[in-house]
Amino acid sequence: MRPSEQTRPTRIEGTRRTRPAARRPAAQRKPAWPALAISGGALLLGGAGIVGAVSVANRPATPTDTAVPAATVKEDPFKWDAKIKPRSVVGAKFFVEGDTEDRKRTSVSVGSVAQQDPDVITRTSFRYTAEVLAASDGKASETRFTIERWKQSEGNGDDLCLQGVSVLVKHVGAVRSFSIEDRGVQLTQGAVSWLEGELTKKGKPDPDVLDRALDPPHPLGDGEEWEGDASALFSALGMKPLELDAVKSKIKGKLTNVHVEDGVHAGHVKLAFELAIRSADGQGTGTLSGTLELDRSLEQDKRDQESGSSVIRFDVMRNQKTARGPAVVKFQTDTTTTRRQGPL
Image (cartoon, rainbow, N blue to C red; front, side):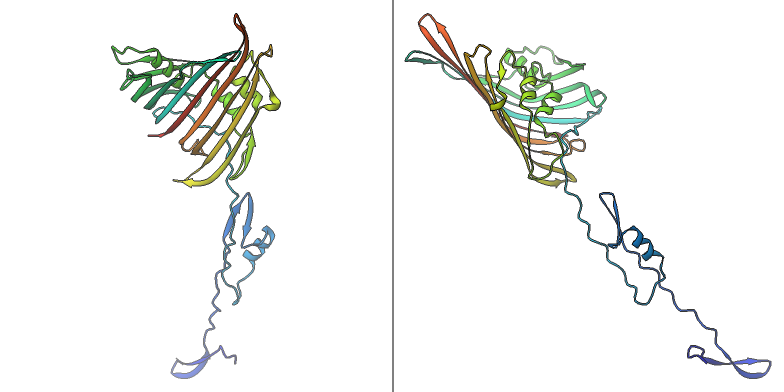
């Protein structure tokens, strides 16, 4: 008798005899299923390949089977794709605030005599909120802006005419127009220029064309650099009939400090550019240069948010003939901006 066939007394029709006890089946353990992990489209099961995984799952368990720990899968590092842009939807609200200083200076030199005009400095401080009222194909076609703070200073006077004003901006194709919704508002020329530059983008390059010139042409990761298209930037800025010296012109950018904020990837973007320009007659030369640093969302389709600063300089020199002899005219403008924007 096998050791597992133990005996026990059984009474049948008044007699006493022994019978083998029913044999209990050996306890079966459930298969130890290794964890599934998907990385970059590859299926891993406890470190085994697909064929090995099927074999592991189908073979019967043995007393030596133990749970197989899930393999540690390292996710592919995040890549910023600058081609992914935010889409406007009806009801979306956001804010923009910033400070800008424009400094212009002009000088004329005739022989050894130089004359420099006083610097013209314009400072503007602002904050506005916005709500998208209509949109089509991911682009806003009607937006209401409420200017909560606005002050422009030039010389000794302060212009406050836009403070608290509501502005409606409509987009028809590439044309944008604004209208003041408040009655009795008298706009200064400085206010009109700011509204056209900030809200309707009048006289400014197409933002899509500008992005193609400045943004990285392919997705890139933390610490990577890229070169922009100087010729495309020159064309986007509409600087003709000036000419571009492509050999001396450059655009370079770098992405650093990639991290996650509230579930969205963010990072630090630094961009530096220099366009070397000249007049067709060879009598004028100049440079348009600048640096831009932003701490920004790298997934604008999830959250469009950024803050940063920029410094842009336009420096031009031209030789001219005057009644007093050959003259050198120099013009320089420096624009310094800090800016922050995000959803409400």
